[in-house]
Length: 431
Image 1 (cartoon, rainbow, N blue to C red):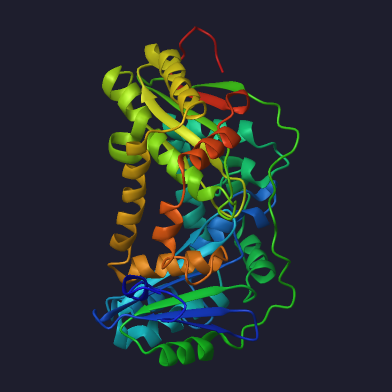
Image 2 (cartoon, one colour; image 1 turned 90 degrees about the vertical axis):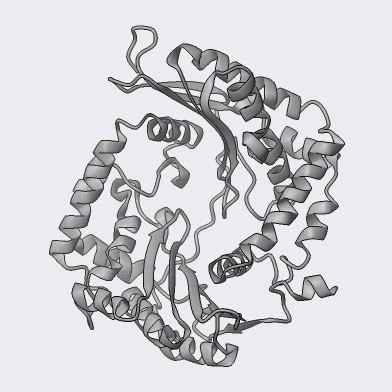
């Protein structure tokens, strides 16, 4: 291992401990700052809820800090405010994530509150009613957001109703309205548990002390009814390309969302697909799509592409905001750039520039405790190995133009692309 690699979080300077209840604790000492960050996750995301109760997981996560068996709402938030600490929970499709920050000397309090919120929430009725009302208001507002509606329509067309990715984590007005505090309590008792939980601690703490602290807090957690981890596969029998039109009255802009099935994070060609996506719609002023659709042709207010890359087949998408009169031209221009990326090798300069971009931004992420904790969590969550960051530059630089072309051709298949457009009625018909 080179001197540069040794200075990056790796298997030699990350302490990893596995508790007998299935929790993995990872600690990286960073004495350069006096703060400490924690990032963690458990398998309690949206894929564990039923379609009829879509949004249950995210409401449960949002209500964890409204009251516990040991603290009421004011007690939870007062304990954090008294030491200037932060703690929050956020639901994703596969996992419930949490993150927090405090001074190193206050890590025991931060861990204690996180443990209390995860294990002992009571979900007071009045707070659940408030959170449910806030979610319903947000959903009603989002129904008039053309970008939200286009993304939702694309997702629902790409994934069948039998697939968990058909549904977002926020729920619908119908599903949220019928979720009760008792539903949150049931979901918590069934889904929350220590198996395969990850907790990362980064900052001015000794690794042994941090492991001992976390072990004392979480080591006795048990939930024998915790279900098996759910695996999500690419849907079979996809009908191919389709066009969805969603009318949003009163709008002057249309939003476009185009999507295909992308690679999961552990796919062999995920990093080549990342580089291909960067060239297509990320690097510089949003890559080739930004240059063609927005800058040269003036068809879009914004235009970019995004690669998901989670625990399952998340979509590879292209998004754009356009004048309704330019919708078809913008879509055609995007498809032209996709056709170019999937039919010809990128230039030497394109490859070198994007490799430099990827390897150059990695050290920037590692300048903060939060960035280090996030990357260490990702390495553990996806099973990448603790030397992934140390080997990252070599991994990126050994990718060739043929690898990018092959990845683009594998996923960016025009015949499979779903196109969704949300905005004012453009032809007198209704969606």
